Image (tube, rainbow, N blue to C red; front, side, top):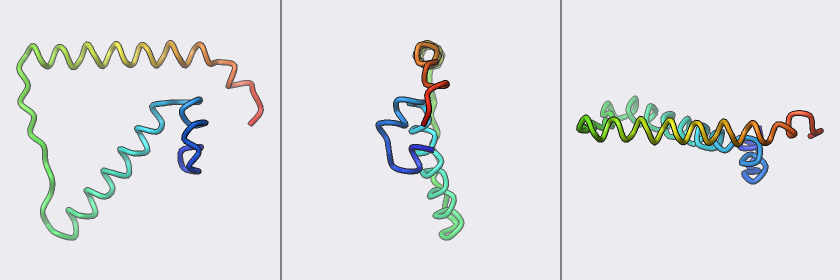
Length: 82
């Protein structure tokens, strides 16, 4: 809600991942519109080694764990008035 209103500081306070989700949604929408209009689609082909794949998964797990910890420490925001 706050990201859509342009209040990124407050959006970050409530959920940092929400800003990234909105940005990703906008990028995917622009990609889809360009693909439909031009008939050419942007595609990325990432060939990662087994070690790189494990590293990416590990980093993802650590980041999601940190986000969950942060969200739990900010539980007071759930009861605060807007």
